Length: 131
Length: 392
Image 1 (cartoon, rainbow over the protein chains, first blue to last red):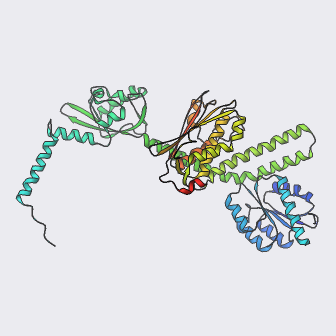
Image 2: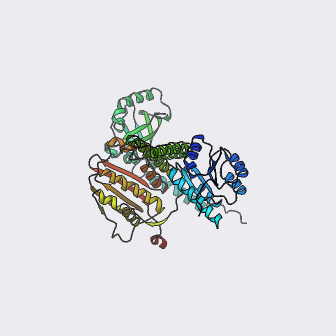
Image 3: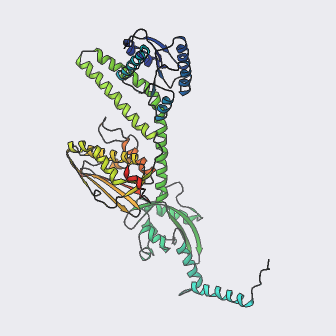
């Protein structure tokens, strides 16, 4: 099995600069190459330019929403997506499942939990790719 | 089609006789007209009271007796002020004198809340329509009195419901806005906690993390309330739900040294209500947890169920520290809490109240400082028992 590492590209889409900085700081030690996006449209563009190994994205942001997740899925049909939203409700979870979201977190989320989940998803993906 | 038959002479005579008999019946024991008016006064849908120029009661109907708890004999010949709460009496005399100076048909005390006082000294909100009537004995004032207790209660309930809906909308909007900044605070504090080796700093950061968690808890509870799904109601065994909730809290009850006394364990047939089981559990859990908080040094938790006039009454009482009298009117208000900072969100009882109300029920509280608190929940009994309900 191959661990998450430098060959992985992690796309972080979050419109709040402070939150994005926090995510980058916390996830940097996974050893991935981090690509940042400040809104939904930028995230889709980045995903097209640099196919990510995993996308960590906020839901409520400019160019965001559930339609954005649908469009993102068209660009990266199999890439694991980890979705975050502030105090989301059950309808968000249900819709997220429909789009094949790998993990869903309500903000505020514990960074350790988020990191564990991302690490696990990347390892799983790398393991699958290895087979 | 046959043309309508002209009434025969005999039939016309019979009708005239009927009318004459009717008038005579009205006139039993007195002048027919006076007795007819008396009957009209008694049949009026509101209380009717007549006073003379000196404010002496000269006529009341049965409804006034009912409204104020006096007999007719106790009211007749007495000043009308006896039905006015003491604090308004002096002013009332002035108002009455002014009305006599320029009598006209109108509502009394427009824009002000009017109250009547019963024989047992209790007050109730009323509306009064005044009609001056000139008689050969002088001016008489006819007051039509309507007890508006129920309407006032409904208005209060509506205001409360509207306010809660506003709180819900506000909370949902706010949650989205504060979730991210709270995450930044939480994340940065955790990050520093990992990096520092200084105990004091570590402790301070731990406090920051705990406080963010506290806000998260409040927001989640508020959102649970705001996003409450329409209830899925079916016939449910209330005693079973009470037992299930107690079981969940078994360990906490034991640790608190609280004894539980209940009456529904062997109750046959079990009492059923038409309700959402999860929401009812939320109601009972909230009340049980409050009771446990109120009895930090142990005590007794009494739970009883009974059916009264098609209603199922659940009583949950504790022997804890009680709620101060001045706080009682506010305990169901959002964010009102008597618990020390950090212990309560001030939303538990708001949720309880909302759920019970939504189920067409009511909740009442009775409490005495140092003696304990009793909550009484009344819910409509289930009309029929669906066999599936017990197999949950």
